[in-house]
Image (cartoon, rainbow, N blue to C red; front, side):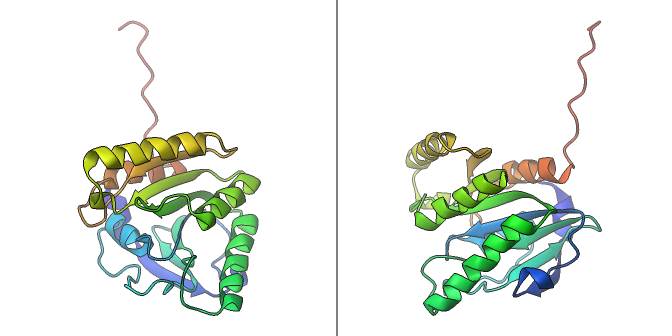
Length: 209
């Protein structure tokens, strides 16, 4: 478990991309259908209980929320999408702001897409993958709430997901994740490390060895 992420602190919220922090450094954004466990995953990855607001009411994340890791690196919690009980006009506004953010944000280097393992690849998940394809943005999928399935069923769902996304024109990877059981955190940290430039380069093999 990488302690670097434990120092995450809330930076600011923005209703529109124009209100975001300066477009400098490196950002990784988290997106997911309402109630996919996005806020719980961010809290688990950062070893904090209240960094990202969690709620049993879907659609509570209505802003672009920025979390500072250090002077150059940030996590971004995007508005939850899907079946939030809000007006359709507001849903469209959230989606437009996400589309603008994904299209215009130069510091964005990767997208963590969260899907409930029991309901993967819904319409909005596919839409996010299409946006990522257009922007040539790499995607790492967390199949959340993996503890809800037996190990064999979870592994099979992951395999099917990997096969499905391998057919798409987007650089992608996927893993099992459970915020409740603290499973998959190290693997997710390794992906974040690569995007943030924190991964240690592999040592060159000594030709004389």
